[in-house]
Length: 312
Image 1: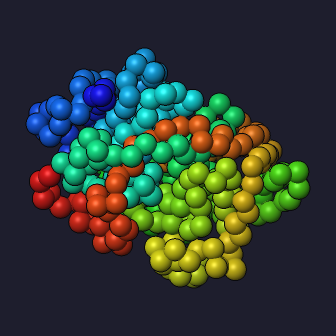
Image 2: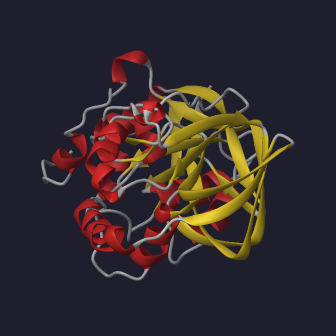
Image 3: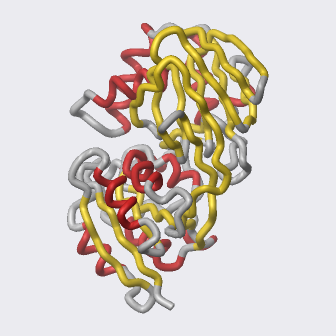
């Protein structure tokens, strides 16, 4: 029996891979396996609307874009019979990297044609939903600043971090983690479903996307001179061994702050208000994952290679 799929393309996503994408999708689709439609999102939030309308009507709803597009499309499919597919064309692609999606478009399309459907957890944060990683602190601060920048891509993001890091001061937060209350001065606090932000920077190396748990990553204030070592530990997946980092697995968390909490959800800036309630939604979303022969294993240099236009 044929599968049905709809591709939701964000034409503004990432670093220029959307050219002729509809034509490529139609060329690479196995018409013996799939009947497809292709639509384009037109503004922020539109991909969610399109996904919600497609929910339950298609076997697969495919997000063609970056982390923000994947989040919008995925949100529309929570507790749905439709599975989320991903063609990663953004600049971070955190969930896609965790799922070992191939980054050549024709290979990613082969996954949609032949992939396996798996259920994964979703994190709910007040009225927001995270498929990958959410949080408060420095990464959220950068997310809010980056949203106003015209220049996009990993290099622009790293330039902003380099500029803001020396001036950033840690803040004090009150948390209740599965009933236990703690207060701490934190540089950042992440709520991780998968192991990484994107670009192979792993904030929660032991996180599993289907274990029914949130990896709560508490990075306390640290001397600025230790930043290079911490950065390396994000890349080599050893941040959980740092004396400045504590990771707690939890099902429910409340975080409070005297002033409104600037946060991010899958890299997109949000405002949580003065308190955020965070809880796990076990196996709430179906996704299409690659069969073994199409999986792209982690490569530290891969994000740099993706910036070079090598075709599909």
